[in-house]
Image (cartoon, rainbow, N blue to C red; front, side):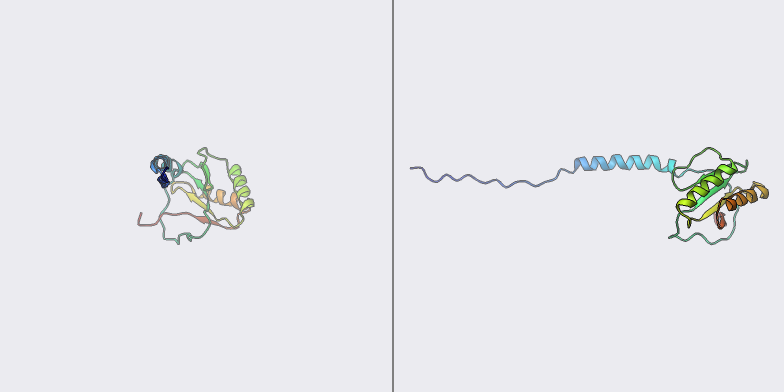
Length: 144
């Protein structure tokens, strides 16, 4: 007679191998570190200094119409910035299109301190004709 043969029941091992996840995380970290300086670059403008109230943190990111010392116009809409200079009417058309999508979005002018007053006024008039209700002027704080 055979005695009752009992098999040992093995417990299932429930372990997760985290090494592949760590590898993926490190690759993503390297990608983000490499692309961060590229994304944050913009048009070099030497802003005038002044005491001004900063935009509220909870406000929408503004459309930034920039004018360089060479009187070249650029638009930064918060996404990837195009580095080619724009004509004044092109810039106004792009701002009007952005305001069609979000009419409450603030618009600021980022003018180099060396640019003539007339160029800044022409930009502001062009923005007003594009339907911008009010335009802010960007400055650097005196501490910087």
